[in-house]
Length: 333
Image (cartoon, rainbow, N blue to C red; front, side):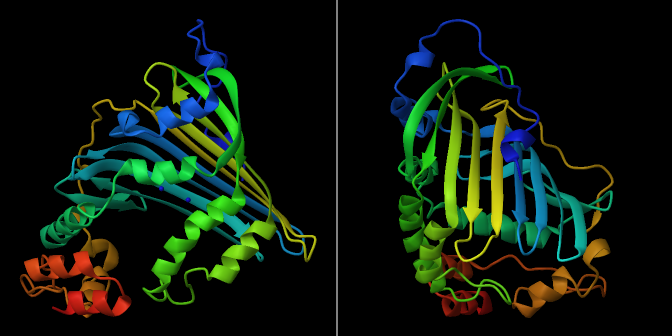
């Protein structure tokens, strides 16, 4: 890609842009077509993503999450990024908070937690790079997903020009056609169901559960901000209001994605004084998980095993896997 996010995108300044470029009179559908086209591809950006959720009624809960930092990718190479993730919330009498991060230099990978940085071993990094390169060959690219999103937007309105991180943008507001959105998600959910359970206690929503979404969503609005000169997406906000017809429960979800330094060269470097990941997860952690999946290599110096790079046969198998059994067979090769 998941709470007043529109208000939480704090790093963006909003205000009327200077100058009359004619952008404020552009057809809003034309603005979206240009922003979500291949010509306006985003290859790098400093992202500021936030998500807030607030529920009221029989049970109250609040959740906020953010993801910030530079991302540079494209061209089939492993992306470079230096991201910080934060999350906190409360509900059912419990509170929680988390702060961590992940860094990729394209050749090496790191995670941060508790004020320390940890580097993945070379074999595991090799597995991640090869798996990414194999999966990227199957992706249809950025325009496919953006085109699908554009097709569920309605009641478009050109709100004029607005400054986003020093760039003049055209703001287009409107509504999300929930039924179209659910119809767009349905084939993906049905295909994902063939993979079985995602994790213990969780599963892909059934078609019937997706139908209930249209009844729960009271309203869904959005604002898209595209560069007045280059038509590249600079900001996207959305607000979804939920209302359970069977009770008095309500909820609000707000999302804000702000992009700065779009398509500029970004500096991503390895963190200083990174420790081995085994210092964080221990011998029974990541190595144990990978070993249980049949990916554990030989041990070094008597320590816990390290993950072996995938074989060519495994990579070819993963590219054609369609079910959970197929994935299991690939990993076991």
